[in-house]
Image (cartoon, rainbow, N blue to C red):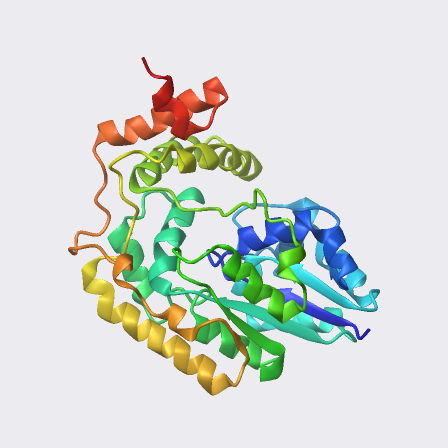
Length: 343
C-alpha cells in the first residue's frame, strides 16, 4: 500500500469537531481499513498545529506543544500506508506554515482536505467563538463589518484557502468537501469525508459524536457575561477548561422563545457574492469536489427578517438560560429537563 498523508484543515465551524470525535473513537477500526489516525491522544493534533504555526493563532503559551508536530510527522513518515492529521487551526496556516507542513512529511505525498461551507452559516458560529475566546465586547454589527473587509475572514473563505494551498500542491492533491446544510442528515458530512480518505463510513460508530452546535442568542449573551467576569482572573488553560464545562450545558439549555443568531437581511447580496466567488475559485482550480457545490449558496433560513442583527434577549431571558445551566449542573441532569423538575 502506498504511503499518503491526508491533512484535514477545517476551517473552523465546518463540522471538524463532529468528524474528529468519530475519527478518534474509531481509530482502531480505521487502522483496520488501512487509515492511521496519527495521534497519541485526542488533543495532540491541536498541539501539533500550534507547534507548526509557532503559536501564531492561539492567545496563550503552550510549552506542552513543543515538538508535537514533529512527533506526529514522524509517525506519518514511518507508516507504510495512509495517514490522517486533522485540526481546523491548520486552516489559518500562512504560506510559510504550509511549506513547513509539506516538507516535514516528505517523502510521503500530502493531500489536503478543505471543507467548504456557506459563509452565512459560518459567521454566526465564528462570532460565538470570538466571544468564547475572551473577546466579549465586540458587537455583532462590528464583527460583520470587520468580516466584510477584503482581508477579513482570510482563514475561512474557501477561495483564499484553495489558492494558498495551490501555491504548494497540485490541484489533484487538494480535495474540497462541501458541508451540507443543517437540515441534512448529519452523517452526510461523514460520508463525503470518507470518500476522500477511502474508508467505509457505514462501518464506523457515530453514537455520541460531538457536534459542537452553536448556542442560541440567550446562550451567547450568557456566555458574554461569564467571559467578562472571568477573563482577567483565569489563565488560558483555566479559561479553556471553564469553556469545556460551560458550553455543553448552555448549548443544551435551549431556552424556549430564544432564536439562533442569523445574518441580517442586508447581508444577502454580500453572502451571495461570497458564495459565487468561492464556487468560481474551486471551479477554476480544478480540485476534486465531494458533495454538492450548491451547498455553498446561502438559504433563506440564514437571514433574519430585518437588519437589526443581534437582538439581545432581555436580562431576564439571559438570566433564565444561565439559571437553567446552573440548575442542571447542580442536579446532574440534562439542562433541557430542568423545567420538568419544577413544581
